Image (cartoon, rainbow, N blue to C red; front, side, top):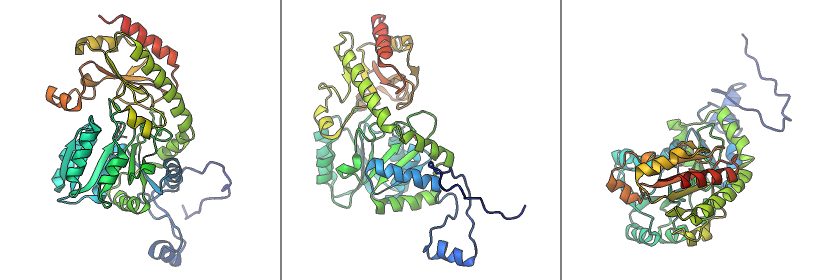
Length: 386
Ligand SMILES: *Cc1c(COP(=O)(O)O)cnc(C)c1O
């Protein structure tokens, strides 16, 4: 086979082509100088550094997040890890909420301390107490990682207040996988880097794993260098799958916002349900913060039956509509009994620190689901509870 250029006649396709490519050629030595040495011409070089399909999707994500720049990753965890190692060095101190995503906590408690990073963790159940902790530590903090809404209770923090207490050079990252735009715009509240598991709502179809970092261009550049080097990159076809999903993000979020509120209201009115956690309800402990920060409350509804763990399992087993699975932001409705599923390895003591009751059920409503079917199913299952 001889060297052959691709026929690029069809540059007028409305949807850009999907690039799946390991390497890019240069025309001659002059092109190498312009494209690689001096960077006076844009040129592809190698597949780990950039890809036209990613660049297209990253541009779209910056529009959606109202951020200066964005990066794609192989998973939400790759996005988190690459971000943290881009800024932290031995001796740096960081703060995160106890209610953060389980594997993000593992990064902070197991992986980062090996690099000499000092980790402080504090609950956000009482946002004022968390704020006090920020004040106490403010002079020492290189980075504050926030997550809101948190799982399973959808706790929130007062970002504006926390930001105002921190030194300007402290980097503030936030995982808002549970509330992407249009429900919440982290960047607009001064978050430096918004980090998402795009596996969840951003993609929304349960068919890919992906992660996103959006934020200030100078910070994103640093994270890009670390992505180039550590390689947690996304595949071109997967990036294109995400691109397609982003067209319907608003529609999907509107639909689950509506369904979530209806299900939460149904459960709250039901006399056999002990407690409901949904930021769209006045009863949510952080309702005031929800009104300040959120435009919609999503499809995840958490409730407590006030029963034993076994009786709760019986209830969950008797549901016919949802899949028993720990994910959210998918086409299908998913349900998990928190202490039996995500937190099955936690001791009683650990469960107490994150405030998860044995009868906690997290229902993640799928955008394809008819809300009446979910309510009917819940109603029937509740009636059958012993
Ligand atoms: C799923 C999830 C992650 C991890 O993302 P992956 O895409 O599974 O790697 C991080 N944070 C939150 C809040 C999540 O729900």
